[in-house]
Length: 398
Image (cartoon, rainbow, N blue to C red; front, side, top):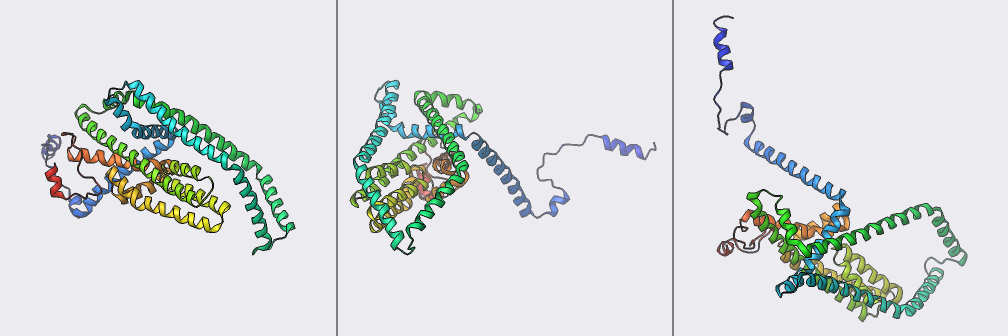
């Protein structure tokens, strides 16, 4: 090795000083415009976040038979929580408060079902008579109406329909098996939801303390404050949804009663239960009311029933849901509509049902963490999507 090469080797293996300057960039980095570098930095971070959300949604869909009962149990707990908490504050034993909550809920649901069965039994003869008359009128319309069908043609069409049913017997049987499986899943989910409800009412605080230990010690206070504010929002959501469902049921049921549509009380109960499923429930139950009016009262009464249903749904969709729900969950009305539509596209009816409370919980929890209100215990004064309170007033309130 020559003398000229030795200094180069020494320089090659000589320890280099470690620099902590983060502003050092290569020539290639300097050749890229700063705006493109910033955009690329945002892009790969957003892709990473989207991938994490996608994996989370995939896991939820994979475990939907466990996740849906858990969410149902949490929502029912939030619905019962004001009365349950009132009993605890008035020195009711916890076991008695749980028993009263469960029996009271069962009594209300059972009472509604009894009223439905009672009216169905009372009006069943008239409904059967009206059904026969409607079928006869339909036959007359087939003969004398625009179609002008003969008895032979009607019989042929009926026979073709029966043949089609026979040919599709295997498909119908497979569908029946699928329905039976779904019913089994629903029954299992109902039992699991009841068990979760009892556990949350009996030892919800203990379950949350155990869950809180999964987070780092330094962040437990912040997580606890954010979760508690989120839980208050879920309780407000359940209370507001109950009010909206009651308004829908009273409006459509009263309209059916005044128009003398049969089974007005069952229709009102059906609307009440269906209104807990945003958008889909209101549309389906309203269609049932219009169909009953069309079959048993004629097209003009059906038209008036349709106007009543549309009026109630417009009141719900444009006033009650956005304003009351948006205020209750601290989310802008536009966000309420978008998350319901997005949840329905991702997970169907369960997604539409749980989208708003989940978005509200995440929204309020994020605001609590970002604003630092978890340190003082004060509810966050704004939200991430929209704020109707002026900035100066929010500063004074804080």
